[in-house]
Length: 196
Image 1 (cartoon, rainbow, N blue to C red):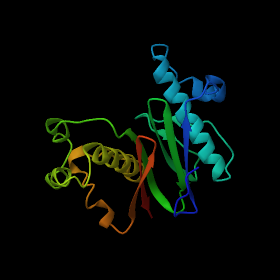
Image 2 (cartoon, rainbow, N blue to C red):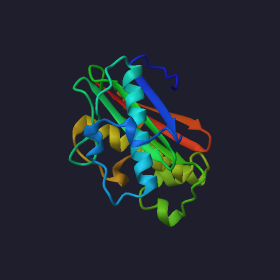
Image 3 (tube, one colour):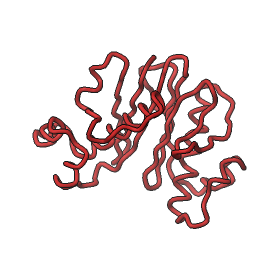
Image 4 (spheres, rainbow, N blue to C red):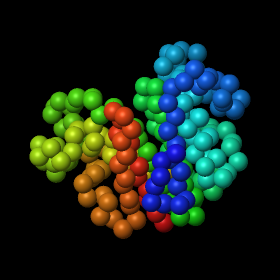
């Protein structure tokens, strides 16, 4: 578990292990597994659900199956909001209490990934590109922040945002939005919380 400046949010990271098998899933979670998934895709799904179970347990909640919604989003218990992200052999889940949070989004990315200016220009605002040029952020930092914000806003407002409309530089100026960046080995983890 990561220590955060919030008492009512839990973030759990689960790394690959030989024990991360479908035996760690509830039967209700197993029905979402597709036969055509690669071994890596199956492993990331299992790791994501294991991280979600641990995060729920950290908040002293009963561990329940985490199902999938219409757009693939995790469905949490009625009084919880949260998010799951996975990359390669690592997964992270963040959950918080709905009485305080409208939405929570989390994303994990490999910091060593290189994106060309042509690639990151597709999702970055001019101000974000300027920050990348000044080396204040890397393209992966911006991408991960956008993913976390996108997930938190989807949960909070039930709508998908356009990538280019998400301003990662100024979003935290909103009084109810907090973004926290954490590092784990060569991975960057961004957490976005939208408070009520």
